[in-house]
Image 1 (cartoon, rainbow, N blue to C red):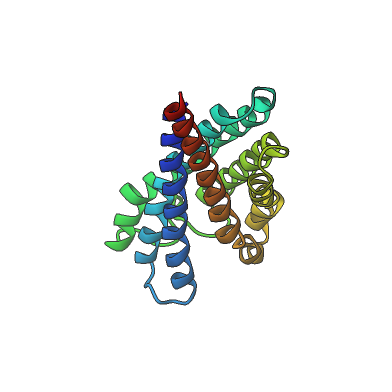
Image 2: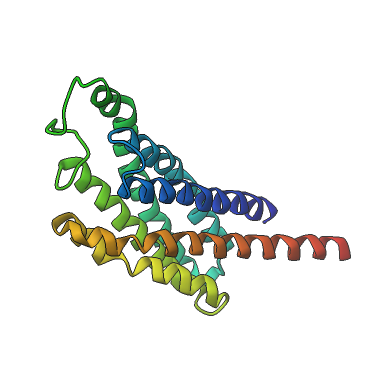
Length: 209
């Protein structure tokens, strides 16, 4: 299980870092400290990297869960894969196609693939984060007995599900959904702590043997 613990530590820590790397520019963007559309680069780049890091974290949580509880983490992994597929499509297309053309003024905000409120790609993005919340919500129940802190942090992030969907129709809810900037990094810290603890336990057991 050492590979699971090692990969889990790295993926959870990277998920935490990429979440912070997104959150800070998001705050700066709302404060108009980063000009538009250049701000989109600083939002999309860490988000693109976060998606696979989170998916790997959920896979490692699945392998680290107790056998009787793996059904919950398996469901979590399924939704993590859906999230990763959704948002990587959105962010890669924005970074490679839409944003460069927008910066060169070849298109404007009315372009069909532009990333703004109530557009096609915004809908896909909201759906992706809905899947992410579903992922943490279900995975939480695998740790309801073995790790209360991880259970709570995953569950709290999962409870954002309805807000992340309704925010597409009522953009003011994006400000409520900003709680994600707290709940998700905390969940990843708790996941990292679990992998770290299990890795050290496995290491000490090997020494004793």
